[in-house]
Image (cartoon, rainbow, N blue to C red; front, top):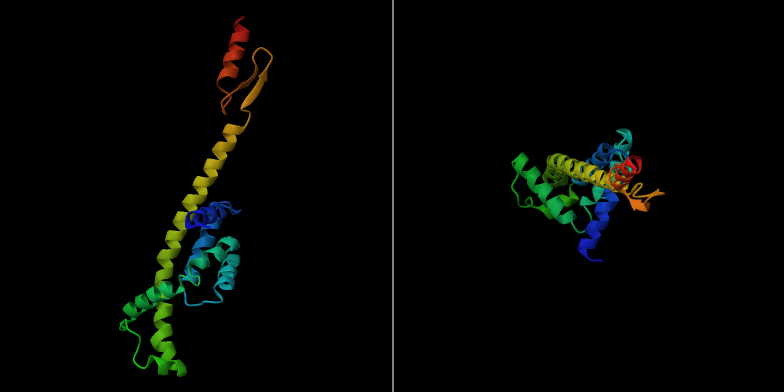
Length: 186
């Protein structure tokens, strides 16, 4: 499957989710926010629990955490580490003795995990807001498009004994009314 087909498929999966547009968009925002935090492996249960607590779309929240999938995780965690290091005033390069700090939990927590957590929360806010806005707009636009399509499909063909089967507009205007006027005028 190529990238275009995959993105199209994912788009339609999101916009067709059941629920109000706000609920779907909030679910995506929750998922994106949790996806930016360094909770790899438990992101989906965390996002679903938060969405359940706030009564938002749990499916959208679960899908939103896939912002950090095995392909994108290194980039996402590099960006969140860089943001956290910037806000904490740490250097961007890995801390001195990084290999040794893995064996010492305190060094790991303060030198690596703290910038990841801070950067994750800093990055989560704009990602969630942006994800909410785009998802809300997409869901509303898709549902309006479907509503208009359905309205245009309803009663397209009408039977009139004088005209036979004929096409009318969605609002009941057009040839049917003209035919009625002609029949009344005769």
